[in-house]
Length: 298
Ligand SMILES: [Fe+2]
Image (tube, rainbow, N blue to C red; front, side, top):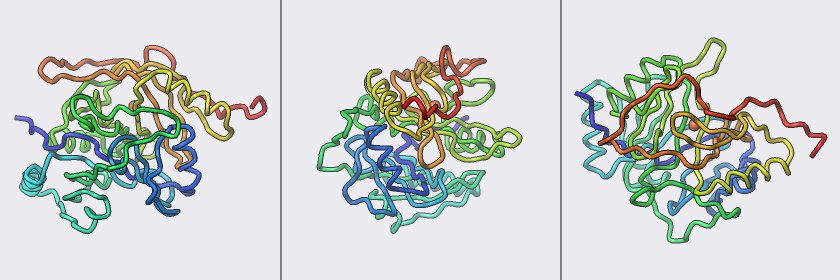
């Protein structure tokens, strides 16, 4: 019997970037995220909804620092800790880190590739309403605010089978479908919160992309226009529509060196009726690879 997951959402993501200020400019101008005023030159915190922060970008080499996986409450966190402990998987409660993350409780754990996971409950909801500098509205909720989480992460693992076992059999993430054998897994109505990718020869493990979803297709279009008006951004995959989650999106390389997928219209999963499928392509149309934009015509 497969475990039922205590984890209910991708609550937050920690990233690193060599120039935090440059990332802040990108995140506000292109993505329309809001900078939390308590951010520092070493640690940028970004809002996309009522929570005080969803994305943290810290000074570093560029890439994934940690993922924050939300559980409902202290009882669920204890239950998860007990289950992992019984399986011999090391976890560590960290009250100081919980304070820093502005959550009520936090449990540290590593996945088989050594990625830092933070299981947490009780995130801080800000008393100031979310205000996007680009009038964007992000999709993080379905029935209650935040219940679909920040978005999804695509991570490349050196041992894809071990990662699949850990996230699905141990944590209880549920299979949505596969594309060319790669599992896309969900923990709430969002089609997937995680893509369990496998590194190819010569490919690096780590964050492939972070997806955030906006409420209107126009918001995706406005972001594309902003990128055209700027210089230095690289569209990694052009506008296109994914086969499995039906997301219309594009991928852009951030100043942190990893990609953000910026999308609209992802399907929702109802576990009582959902059946898995397999696909032999990532997209119906678009999502074409593109070289660095030609600077001379901008
Ligand atoms: Fe994606």
